[in-house]
Image 1: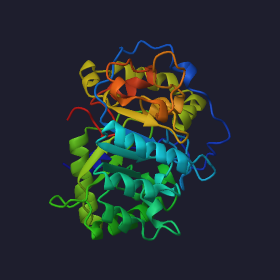
Image 2: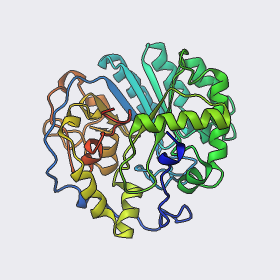
Image 3: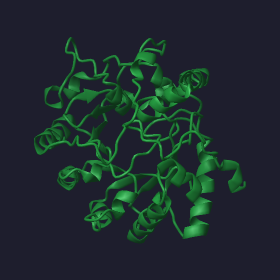
Image 4: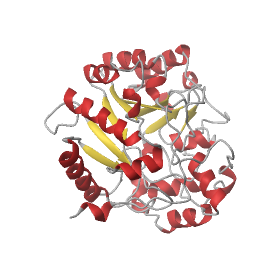
Length: 344
């Protein structure tokens, strides 16, 4: 199977030079009147924590709207609340995201505390942060702590990555991946797990995950001597920066119609919100990271919103999950979650 079959063409109108801060159209009003099926929570296993919206990149597909000018950052007191919840909630996995989560000044402290408890820690890394000034030892820290890395690399070609994420990002990402490979990440018989993430360039469903993973592995091994464990394909959510761009282009309704037309009921059994909760930089709780970006708080009795310090992990199972039309992004086609396709 040739690599060319898995290239995705860039949307010419999604220019990386466009300033995403100029116009930010709200997307929730277009999503809230939804016919998405009702779903309820299972047993809580994963705590996904957004450590802040500051990032060294401003990617067009970003559903967070993160960037270098964002100043939201989780403080030490809220970090301690997260650590306390890990202890009393029996959490199996701590999933750290942002922005660039590593830019939070308490990132390493939180990772160390969680790993000392035996909690699996995932770092959702944009790779380029490993090359930032002052972060020269970050990759070694992650390896020493046994942190699993899920790294964003939207294609294996320079043209497409730089078009989506900015000039020079591909070269920096490859350099970071070489560092991780040298530390032992991504080897099939090793303990250090490195998974990559693919996002489509525009309003389309991602290609079949297994075939694209083979193409990635072949290209990165042949061209750069790189290895990794798995490739996760993620559907772009019509919210925040990406959703706003679609509205500006008059493509929002068509993309939402595509997601709805590709809905698969079977994927409802595996969506991530069944066993995960999302926590924002202030400690407020949501069913998932996407709901967090829309301000759809986790339903907890009659409370309009719940802080993590107030949440009883034993009373989450069976609660109804907040849904809107963006949820079709998780159930369309092969499905999509923070761990890639739901059906392979």
